[in-house]
Length: 451
Ligand code: NDP
Image (cartoon, rainbow, N blue to C red; front, side, top):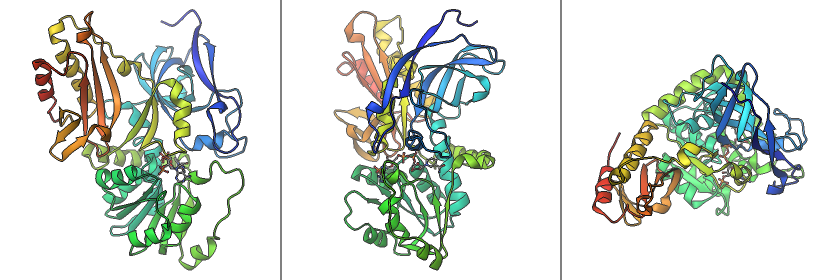
């Protein structure tokens, strides 16, 4: 079955090309009519939208490895979506797919432009991050260009971002000493305490970066995974060892420049220290994807590779999320979620007496299927855990479930799925009737379960 009347949807188009740092004025929201779907096409509901630094380059009218976005046309990028109508033989309603798709809430596309993802292996959003483009970038850049050896020193910039956080952990798995460079005290703490980095440098508060690198890397630098360029990279490259390697992944420090940046000439140091510096674009390494995905999934499954997402909720947040990459608002992968199912999951229970418990246990089951470990009790404004007391502010909300009750507001409950910087996951329950009575005590006790 397919729609016979036309549907409308919202899209976000490039309204103007930015000069320097982009602003919200560069984007415009529009409503458009969708045509009927044709043979071989599917209609999709967008769930998770990826925002990535390379999109900034596509906002310019300049030739590059990815074509520029066109003025007054929708931006596009990695999107995870659910099939809601189909005239495809290979995709059915309810399937989750990934594709490079326009920024539209509802989309029509050819079945060949998307591929199905397996949401029983990992949460759908992971296919935009650790099991998607950024995870592949980290793996291929580090393993195939950096070629780490046990005992070597690896430095990675934008270390708390989607690529960097994975690079650092893979380098640890390879037996390296890992130093991350990031832009806040919260991020450097997270890297050391939550992701096993040996040292982390806050480039925004360090007055002498070169000195900080000498102190953090007493044996010099063997691999510098360059995500940022600019003065950060100048400082690291000055401390590279003989025969060291530089996978040149990104130059985000320069993406908003309006003039060509100049800096130290690198050739003398590359020459005298026989350094290999190699730029790479992940999409040119498709032949390596199956092996990379196999390693990444295996490490995720074994708990050796943790991941972090910053999720903004609502289609309207897409411009903010993209701009946020340039002010460092993200920890791990920046994603916009418009998953209506999880945002307003209206659980319709008949019996009020069991409503709270059912809400919580349904959510727990759902979270456990996504690999969640519920491992703490809620106490006041903090969470007690074998590792100590964690403050609510240490947590990021990754999902919200709402039970609206039948008629009595006392039945309302909101269940937050949360994750701490060091990977501890759990749920918080709030609502009129939930915190004060015996039943809620029972529920909170039951939260203390492990997978
Ligand atoms: P991130 O998740 O790392 O987000 C960007 C981060 O960059 C921000 O959180 C911010 O962190 C940091 N940053 C922003 N502006 C500056 C600046 N002026 N100087 C230093 N750091 C800055 O993004 P990704 O992990 O997706 O991408 C990381 C890099 O890798 C980017 O340069 C990107 O273009 C590149 N890339 C390259 C690919 C390839 O195929 N070669 C594929 C994917 C990504 P902080 O708070 O630490 O400043």
